[in-house]
Image 1 (tube, rainbow, N blue to C red):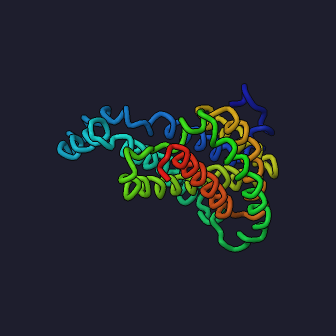
Image 2 (cartoon, rainbow, N blue to C red):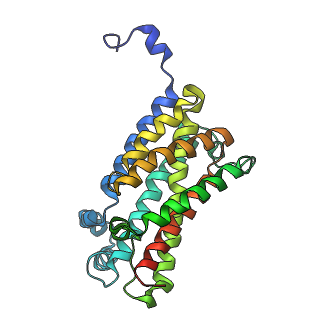
Image 3 (cartoon, rainbow, N blue to C red):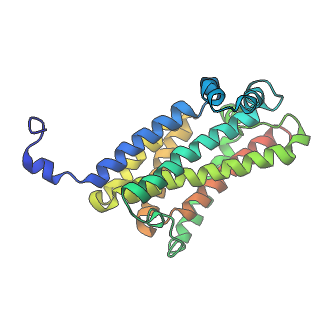
Length: 256
C-alpha cells in the first residue's frame, strides 16, 4: 500500500474507527436491500435445501397473499433491522473489537444526568408534530400499519407498535451508540456529525420537513449520547415522538 500511503500514514491509521465505519456501511446496505419482503422469494432455494419447504410456503403466503400482509411485511422489516442494527454490531463489538457492549451507549449509570433536556425537547417537538399531523403527507405516511378497521387495533396495531418501539431502540443503539461511541475516542465530538450524515440519509423516503428535522434531531441525540454515554433516554424520546405521530394520524383517520 506504499503507493497510496506513506509509512507514517499507515502507522497512523487506527483500526477501530476504520472498522466501525466499514461495518456501518455494510449494515446500512443490508438494512436497505434485504429488509424488503419483496425479495423473500430469493430465499426459496435455501429453505428447500434445508428441508423447510413448508415453512417457506407459509411465510411466502402471509407476506404476499394474506389479508394482513402489510402487518407481516412490516414485522419482516423490523426483524431485519434488528439483525443489521443490533445483532451484527453486537457481534462486532464482542468478538472483533473485544470490548464491552454496554460501553456503546447501553449503560444505565448516568442516563438521567441530562433528563431535563430530553423533556424540553419533547415539549418543543410535540406541538410541531401536532401541527404537521394535519397535513396530507403526514397522514399518508403514518402510521406504517393502518388497521383494516377499529377491531384490528387490538391485537394487530398494538403488536405493530411494540415492534415499532423495539425498532427505535435498535436505531438509537446503532446510530448514537455504535457509531458515536465507536468513533468517540479517535474523533471526539466529530463522531456526532459523522453519524448525522447516514442518519439523515435513511430519512430520504420521508416527507421533506421530517428529513430536515432528522438532521437537528441527529445532532441533539448524538450530543446527548456523547455527553451521557447512554442512548436510553434518547430512545424513549424517539419512541414518544413516533408513537404520538402514529396515534395522531389514526385520530385524524377517525379511529379514535
